[in-house]
Length: 397
Image (tube, rainbow, N blue to C red; front, side):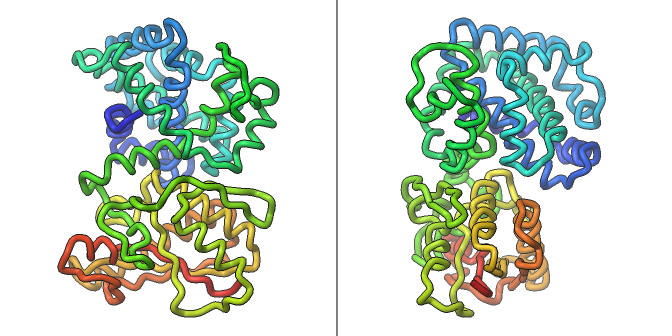
């Protein structure tokens, strides 16, 4: 699930496919993109979880070979629009059965809770994600780029890095839901051995969170999109996104839930501010999001942003009296009028996502400020990065 596996899978999704999926599911392309990222990550996470099982990856590569021979790749546009998969879906169903076993329903339910999509939409996206994964693996195998051994090594190299990105608030609920060995396994107390109960609970909670780690690996070397600065407004921190934020820690909320965030992420600072009764609301106190990523030049949130958006939504739900303004800011590259519109559209996008995740819309404002409130020098790339930001200001607490 390094970029060498995830990126080729998601790269198969064209804008036309995404639009077709959105029309079929009755959601926006942005929501579909986020959900598709989560379900694709879950499929690949399932491969990683079961990779050590004897013969498992050989079976997967056999299915991938069949997918390539049946030209599954060429049927993806029709599948996105709701057309029947190759051979009545038997190949895709066989793949999902290998990955999820008889616990696909539980995985679907967990992903629905995580993404905010309904169960039927998650099931459809899981089937499409399975088709994407099979098509991608089949093509790589046919090109001589992948076999069972190299796939296992890549999956194994990524699996250990996922533990720090699992949200604490899902441990108890999923452990309880799974019960027995599954609950023990996720708490680290399960006995060794195979079977679906060992791996399905970690699988179900991977979702979009895998994408967080992937982006941290991939965007530091190239600019594939626009990101908000990693605390630069408050700390003067530097150039790469999401660096210097520290290890993942648990943050407890007053409604009894908890979340996981980097130790120096915005979530911890926002919760501390809301808990401090001695601090009054002020116009100058802004909290910069530090783990958002947009498609370059537009307001579409990339799926990797879901972890932080979900955390902020959880915080706002836990503090029901709090009202906030989401502010959008840009650098000075381009026309001022275009920058103002882009900043407003991005603020609107974040507000819409928070509302979708259960925050009362009446508690949220969105305002675009364009390029007229820089916090750094626009003549340098580091400065422009810091000026491209989404920030939150508490209006009432």
